Amino acid sequence: MMFCIVTGGAGFIGSHVVDALAAAGDDVLVIDDCSAGTERNLAHHAAGGQVAFIRHNLLDDGWQMHLKEADRVYHIAADPDVRQSAVTPDSQIRNNVVATHRVLEAMRAHAVPELVFTSTSTVYGDAAVIPTPETYTPLEPISVYGATKLACEALISSYCHSFGMTSWVYRFANIIGERSGHGVIPDFIRKLRQNPQELEILGDGRQTKSYLEVGECVRAVQFGIEHSRDPVNTFNIGSEDWIDVVTIADIVAEEMDLSGVRYRFTGGARGWVGDVPRMQLSVGKLKGLGWRCRTTSEESVRTAVRAMLG
Image (cartoon, rainbow, N blue to C red):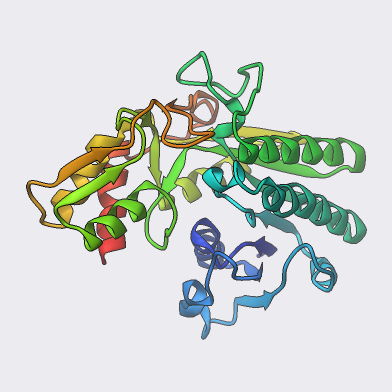
């Protein structure tokens, strides 16, 4: 058994990480201000006694003391809105970079030895090599969000080498599934519920990316922890194929039993400022340790749509 802290544990990916830790028998403390998540995502743990919750913003004080005697921190709390980062970047700087520094300082103060950090494929920017490996350079994010995650990676590396910590940094493709309220699938579902005859699609609809179901993502995260012990362990996590936005729209419409939906495109190769039109990560590094992805992008999308339609 371990005692794990999960920041952002009431959110989409965070709550699934909590589920996996509790299933493994670990004690878990969730720290979340519920600005994006909700305690409902943790309600099924209420009677078990393994999962505790405190409502705190990482930019405030008062939560740091709870890291005492923790074995590992899963730092998942972040502002993930790539589109909004081009409008109000200050929120991403504070909630991603500053908050991560505060987590690292709290870990240093309480001698917490291990950190798991959720990064993003957007650190690569418009990569010239696809599938993109972890060794790809130069890292040139084209969004403020991607830049903040890359800055967090640098901070984590420096703390691991300076203060004897161990970290696992995961660069995620598009992670989708039950409890998600952010991204193209929830956007399409909301729009089609409002107007079943027409769907607005940002960009030209040809954006093609890798998507992975959240349960498969969490399994990969835990696999990496169990099979690597360098001071800083950086892995891509995603499916081994990709899917375009129009096909995602087709799947959503089909699962909603809609036919004849007209697609209206806003135009341009990018759906928004900072959008990366083509993204597929190489997962060869994690595969080299024995991990295998058990689903495709299309299967992940269909599973996610069905979960969100409930």
